[in-house]
Amino acid sequence: MKTRNDFSSKDAYLEYTRSLDFLKNYSIEGKTAKQIQEEMLIDEDLLHYVEKALEVLKEKNKMRGIDMIYLVDQYVIEDEDYEDWLNSMEHQ
Image (cartoon, rainbow, N blue to C red; front, side):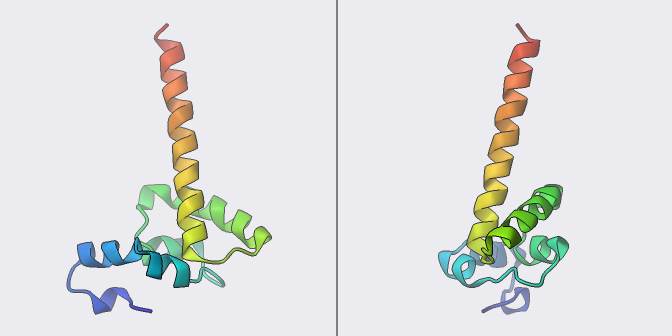
């Protein structure tokens, strides 16, 4: 498994962290939410979603990067939908 040091730029490493190879092989087991956020290059503003997802994934014994990114994305979408709904209600 490659690390940030294997890449000449942050963008190249970001692209790698979104590859199926990385996501299937990256293990979140034994890591803190902050470590996962940094190693997977998940936006720092989404750290609270990583923390939330980590607890859920530990319970389900799903410890791969692909499980983490899927759940974080799901939380972001749910929150954006809720915010859009709130905004639409305020403008009626």
